[in-house]
Length: 456
Image 1 (cartoon, rainbow, N blue to C red):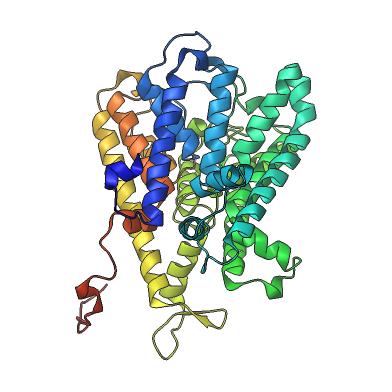
Image 2 (tube, rainbow, N blue to C red):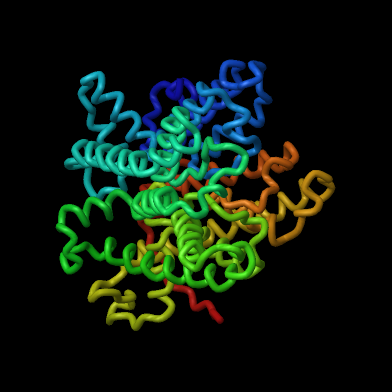
C-alpha cells in the first residue's frame, strides 16, 4: 500500500517509512476504536473522537476527549493499550517483534530503519539492541505492574489486574492515559506504591533506551558513561529537584492543603516527574494549580525527556547544548566545549532547529486554538492564554497535562491538537528527513562565504 502511494519503484527512506507506519497505525487504531465493540454503549463512536483518542495513545500524549474507563469497553481499552505500546517503543520495535515471532530474516534495509529508530551511529548490532530494548521495556513494565497490583486489587477487585497493567505500560511509555474511574489518580494521592511506581517508570522511559543501556553495560560507574548519558543524567538531575521543590512551595497551601508533609513532597515529586518526562499523569488537578506552577509545568514539558526515549519535548540534550553554546568558552576552532569534548556544528544546528521548530509549533498551535475556541461556550470559564498555551504545549511535547479543556474542544480544536501531537511525536529531524530535499543535491557541495549578521 505504501509502495503504491509513493510509486512502485521509489525506495522509501527510513524516516518516510516511520511516518507512513505511524499514519497507518493511527488510521487502523481510529477505525478499531470507532467500532461498536470498542464502546460500552455498543454503538459506533464518532470518528473524530476515535481519531483523537488513537492519536493521543499512539503518540503517547495522554489528552483525552472522553473518560477511557467509562466510555470504552475492555476491547476498546485493549486497543488503546496496544497503541500506547506501539507508540512508546516505536514502529520499528513493533515490527521487530513481528519479525522475530515469524522467524523472518531481517533485511539490510530493515536494519537501516532500526538504526534510524534507535538513533544509532551504525546498523551493526541493531537487532540485538532492539531485543534489549524490548526486554528492558517488559522488565520495567512488569515491575511497575507488580508494585501497583495489590492496591489496584484492593480498590477495584479482580478488574484491578488489567488496570494495573494498563497504567504500568502507559507510565513507561509516557502516555498518561489511564483506565481508572472518573477521579483518575486523585484517590491515590497518598499511595506511595502507586505514585512512585508510575513516577520511576516514567523517568526510566524518559531517560531513553541508549542511556539505560549505557548505565547497565557500564555497571552504574558514572566515570565510564558516555558524554550523552552524562548530559541526560545531569540535566534530568537538575530539572527534577527544581520542579519538586518549586511545586512543593507553590502548591503547599493550594492544591496540597490538607496533606501531610510527606504526602506533599510525594505529590510534588510526582508532578515534577510527570511534567519533565512528559508522562501526563496527575494526582492533583492541573486546572487548580497556581499560575507560577502552570508555567513551570509548561517549561518542564517543553524541555521534555531524553533523546530516543518514549517522552517528548525538545529533549534534555537539546537544552544542554543550547545552554553550553550560550555560556561556555569555545575552543580554537569555535566549537563549544563540554566535558573536554567539542560540540560539533551539526549537533548545534540540530539543537537550534529542534528548539525553533518547537517554538513555531507552540506559537502556531496556540494561535489556532485561540481562534477555534474563542466562541466555545463549553470551555468559556477556562478559555484564556494560560490554559490554551498549556494545552498546545501538552500536545506537541506529548506531556498530556491539561487544565481540563480537552473534552470540550470544538472539532477544529481537536484537529489542531491531533496535528500537534503528530508533529511533536515524530519530531523535527525525522520530519525533515522524511519530507526534505536530498542532502546529496548539487548545491549541497558548494561552499559559500560567511555573512556578517549583527546579533543581539
